[in-house]
Length: 213
Image (tube, rainbow, N blue to C red; front, side, top):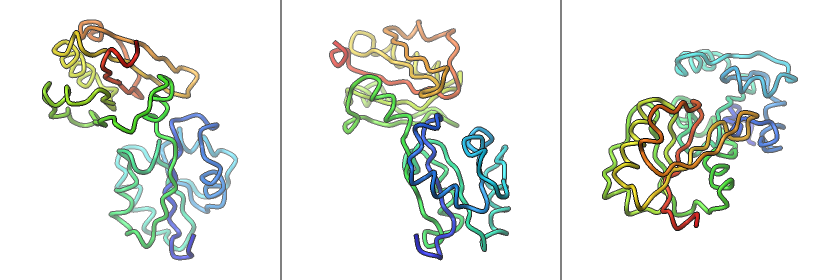
């Protein structure tokens, strides 16, 4: 790491300490300031130094970071820095010359590993904040679709898609991956999803049925 890149954006994986890469641990332990959501900061409770707790707007927390740029700063983000991550918000704010991104393990990687499937040909879609604009025709061009979900609206949207695609696809819900509350379930009809309660950390994997035969 060059001296100018004093802002480290650390991918902390899906949640369990065992899934944090050693290089990320080393970098965070050497930081003077840690920035992140409470559950991420808890992963580094042994690290001393100033802490900025992200609660609500990330922009407000980055305003505080802006006043501390003379220090070594580690900004903790969930999963991997390159897959639907807050990392790009940090890079846009401070520039690539100031930021070093350390990749982590994405919950999408864990989800496909649980199913013993590769994910190189999968379509990734985020349903956080707004619902995807995917048609059933677009769905059917892919045999694997990972939906980052967790909200009730996202669950209902997935249920509608599965109902339309019934016969060709099934859905596997992957909740709280790597946590003690991890749960992996398979659904064959959209109606089965409706009314179910899912954790906020949930990924829905749409699969052509023959892939799990």
